[in-house]
Length: 500
Image 1 (cartoon, rainbow, N blue to C red):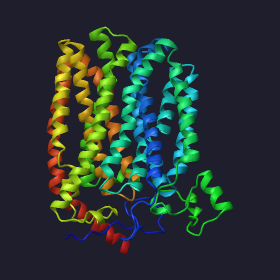
Image 2: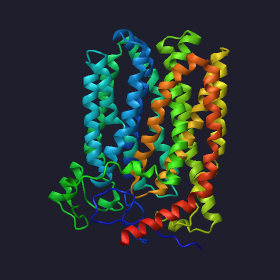
Image 3: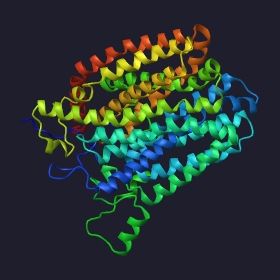
Image 4: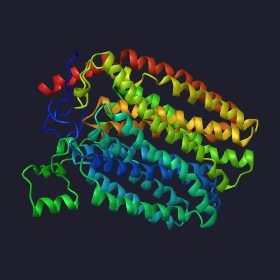
């Protein structure tokens, strides 16, 4: 039987939240000491935060034409508010995620949600286009990091055998925004005006902030271990310790708040061969998905003469497909993991404690069935462009959107889970790397999609993008073929750096 042991090391005195981390559990401990109720409470809060982050982008799509007319600007400048939103959504985790891996999840959640709340209030009363543009960047700076933070929390509380299911539930939160965001945006814009979009986000952000303050427990394993430690307490935890006390709780060193990690740490992951290829492949898929969503409402309005409300309703099949893909792919990932573990003689009880040695075929386990959603995603994208071009029945387009949402989210879940498996002790930072690459690529493709459609036609634009994605499948082969070698070489290098 394979010998499972953790290989991640950390210099405890280092303030750099880099790729080296100490062993914080032993083989006798359960991976997470949080109760089932506590774990699902944490999952619900971080999924809600992810929902709001995605909602902030998607609720805005049906209002683009109204905002353009109200602020007396052009479609290109309005699209800039989307592109720059994505740029800041991608870059902001590089600032916040290393802090979350050093200070803890709770303080960073509180800070980012406060920034997000303030930016929504300001957007609701923004007087002109310039202020909307700047405030959208601030909004992204506050909402962008929560996807990486949520991935960090999932990595903290879910062991590898159940991580796929947890990520499936977690990502269904943001996917719900694909259902309700454009619909809500269309209804609000038609009935109350586009500024009420941001008042609604303000109320939701306020509720989320209160939930974080009172309910979200600290999960960072270097501070609280598997959940038995005491750091960054909720008011209830603080009161319990102050008035009743507990011998089991040890106060974490608050000197960490005087340390500032290297905010470039998330960028360093992109230069590691296997991680970089994962980020590129996932980023390409995400950028196409996001660009499609940005162009979708305008395509429907021009090709099918729909108003903002009806165009918003047409996002529902996409969102339902995304939710279906999140939940189903989570189960598939856990099943594939068990199959590969059994084939290679690993003890499920050991794996449930979170220990994966370098010999475990993690790339094979996570990428075992990736070609199916990849093929569906690519073919659906190409056919969608031709369906819109020939003005096929709207029902046909909506079916394609459901399939498109399902396959896209399946791909995203695979790589979310794989990246956390590769760096389980720095999950927020590695998720931030993923966010940086996919959002920057997304911003570029979103900026190019409208000129491309205008220049060569919707059918050929989506055909060109689809052909590029088709060839990206070669990256999957390279990752599975050379990933284990690169992973072992990286671990050996980190071991040498630690001992020096």
